[in-house]
Image 1: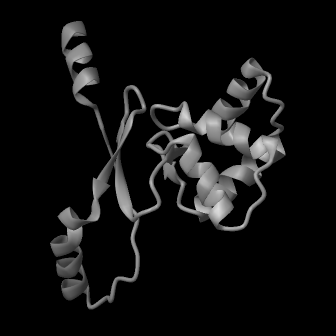
Image 2: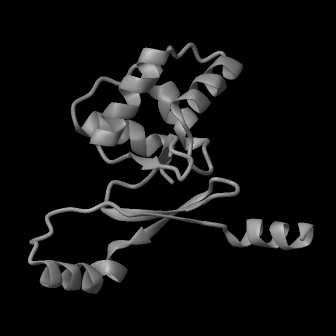
Length: 146
């Protein structure tokens, strides 16, 4: 997960003005523990009276995604969500129960990607991988119910 100051400093480093709505978005995103939707941010903005409109939220998410500060994930339900992340290539393991997301380093997949490229004859330029399952906490809660 990424801190609000990291979002603000990355925006500054790339020459973007630090406006009140951008600070508000950075704060709202930093508060998220797992994946979140644009609607989640809009509801939080209303509750906190942050004054962020729908267009601002969607434009900001697009900008932050282009800077690799948030990444869009396609949930098994078909819904699009986001996770905040440090700007380095990685993958996400997302809990289907609570929504918590964990970054997974690229190194674990290097050999598998090379093998896929070798077998298919493709030169793989980029990839995106999302893994879904239940975190240990949700597994424990699920086992108590059953």
